[in-house]
Length: 323
Image (tube, rainbow, N blue to C red; front, top):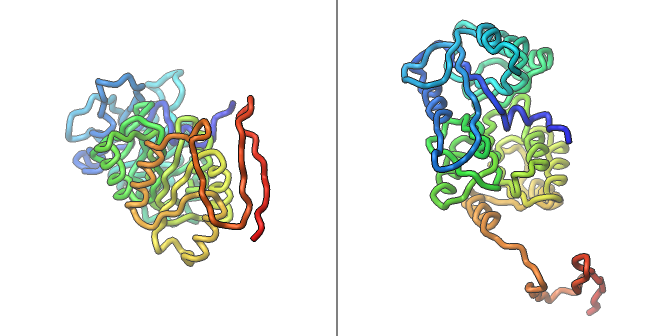
């Protein structure tokens, strides 16, 4: 089975961090501290990390190179890293220079934790020209605990689990991971998108829908991009696994229209952050009903169904009631 196009971006096997010009940049130091996190009590895999740019003020064990060209030469015949992480200040390089350097080095995915003043209509052609996918800018990072990937700015490292989280707010993502860790709830994937320019929520959702390690998905959205594309992805994902969605009031759509659209996708709509917390508890701790142990009581005159066990599972019989 072929890999999803976003697999190198969201589940990298190796990465290079572009540290910028400032050795004391707080975002860069926070990221490297997170990447250096290892849980000795678990047997999780590790993701090799290399640094390119200024030497950090703090001491880390990652190999350091002055440029991507030097890194590629020293790498020899080894495959190029799956992911480049852009953090810190890069006063001597434009976004076009950085994207072009990634493309020439064979790095097809770029995670941008810093901000850029470059407009979207200028970035997209450059990304397409050099065949690079961009998550961000202003992303809070990604985590793939099972593979030892902690490329994010949070102070708490998520536990390994079966719950996926996609959030466009770094504050919300960090708060949910803090609470989940306290409750002993783990994650298969954490994606904090920031202000999406290239990779949109619908594309991340497509990836999570095919991710075997993700049994349920939590989403916190501020911008959905193209509504038709997003709702199509959400409907397809909702057929295979539970999805809970919370949106901000500024998402750009009338609440009644959004309620009606989401109700047709099979996703559960929440109103507040507490709703995501409740959904995380239910999705993590709920048990599937088996062996006819569920009783349904209704006073409606609509369609009802009865079932009886068969050798292959459940055989349904449909009937209609009349008043």
